[in-house]
Structure formats: structure tokens, C-alpha cells
Image (cartoon, rainbow, N blue to C red):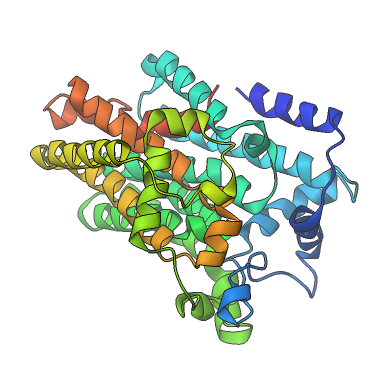
Length: 381
């Protein structure tokens, strides 16, 4: 299952991969972990260019989790590339752990097919690249998978959603809302079950909250004793933002399958250009139709649908709030968070339309529908 990651890394090495710019800085930060210069915030953010305040991405979790591998591989040009490969393998193992708890094996062929489509839509660079907006894509998919399973009653893997969601949210601001939603769902789900269930559920809740505390202790310490980075980020970027029209155009560009799969090399200058009226109308029909189908469901099915729709609308909002300079110049990598979200949305919608979901909650909860397949689509091939 790790062959795609290994093959991608081998290809990058054969092409003379070398850490430059942000990636080189990431490698230095990983070596700083455990010293007096241990990072408590994420990478420097270009939000500083428009806000007038020095800003960083939310957290240092990528550097922290890379610290041990970079020391194992020593300080060489390919250290961070090999480290990222180890992290991706770790996400694969975590995803398998979560999926096995949902009896996913009978759907393994579907999972493998969707995985290939998902990875093909990303392109080879994103699969192995340590650059923070690329490194967050697979963890976000794992977080969505785990959060969806929590909604389906599998609170024992809530810690997976917290770990993966926190990693994605801390890597890059464009992943912050989606990552935060998955973390919140996991925390609420595990706590709610701990209040009404057996001691094992309380242990799961303690584990989930402990993972949350470990992931966010750095940004919290920085907020009170350092740069106050989280406060700066919540303070807003200032200046003109993309707004709802351009945010909607971006959503349509990744929602429609032919754009999602074949438009990945679109130039940054065209990312905020308008889409055709019929594409926009089709997107409205798909979005409204899926919302209607979710509203007609009950219980866990509805809650799962609400989770996916919240991710979609949340990402539209954060896209609309992006400063114009960031959106036009660096548009492509700011859209990476959309990939796992849109795959989740399509699997949800197609599953509802095809009538694959039964009306029995018990029967439904035993099957890794929708998001269980989505999460695997990012990591299992």
C-alpha cells in the first residue's frame, strides 16, 4: 500500500530533487525542534504582506513530527523528502487502522479505484512534496475520514481526526477551517459518548483530548508568551478580499469533475476568472440537490451529510476571505484543501443518488460509505 509513496519519492530523487525556498526552511525548522529555537508557530505566511503584521501559519506540528526522521537521515539535501515519505507512510497506517474499525475490507476494490483517481487528480508533486500546503492534503483526507467515522459512532478513532486535522490546520491557513471542523467533530463526538457510555468511552475521550492538547500546546504558548500569532491571524488580513463571487468561481472549478481531474495545471492568473453560466448553474443544482437529499435523511446519515456540507461551505467562506494579493498570485496551492473536501462531497452525493445507503442506521454504520471511501482514496492504493 505504500508503493505509490515510495515510487514517487524514487522518481523525485532520480530527477535531482533539492530543497529550495520554503522547503529548505522547513528542514532547518525541523532541526531546531528540541533546542532553544524550538518552533512554536508554523511557517511564515504571506498574509504578512497585506496585513502589516508578522504572521505565521497556525502551528509547528509538521516540524515537530519531522524532527526525529530528519535526525535519522542527517542533514542532507534529500532529508526532508525522505522524512515526508515517512510521514505519508504513517498517515497510511493510521488510515488503515481507522478503516479496519469500520469493516472496510469488502469495499477494498472501490477504495483502490477511488484512491487512484484521487492521487491522479493531485499530480505526483503533491504526493511527495514536503511543502506545507502540499503536505497537508493527505492528512486532511485522513481527518475527514476519521471525523466521518466518529459521526457514524466510531468514537474510538476520534484521536485520529484530532491528530490529522490539527496537522492539516497548522500546516497552512487555507486548511485551517476544514481541519478545525474535523477536530471539533472528534472532540464533541468523543466527549458526548464518554458522558453517556462505558468507561472505555471515557478513556477514548481522555486520549482524544490529550492528543489535542499535545498538538496545540505550541501555538498556545506562543500566543501568551511569544508572537501572539493566533491572535494576529484572527485579527484578519486587512485590505481587499476575494469576496463571494471569486470564491464561488473557485468552488465551481474544483466541483465539476472535468475541472477537478484535468484542470490542475491551470495558470494562477485564471483561477479567479469567472466560470461559464451553465457551469455555475450546474454547480447550484448539484449543491442544492445534495443538501435536499441530506435533509431527507435521518440519524447518522444526516449528521454525516451535515459534516460534509459544513466542510464545503466553510471552505467557500475562507476562500472568500482570502486577501486578493494572495488569491491571485498564489492561487493554485491555496486550492489544495478543496481536493479531499470535493471528493468527499461527490462520494456523498453519488451514494445518496444511487440509493446505496440503507435506511437502517445499524446497517449503515457497519459500512464505510462516503467518507470512509474518501479517506482511503487519499492514502490506500
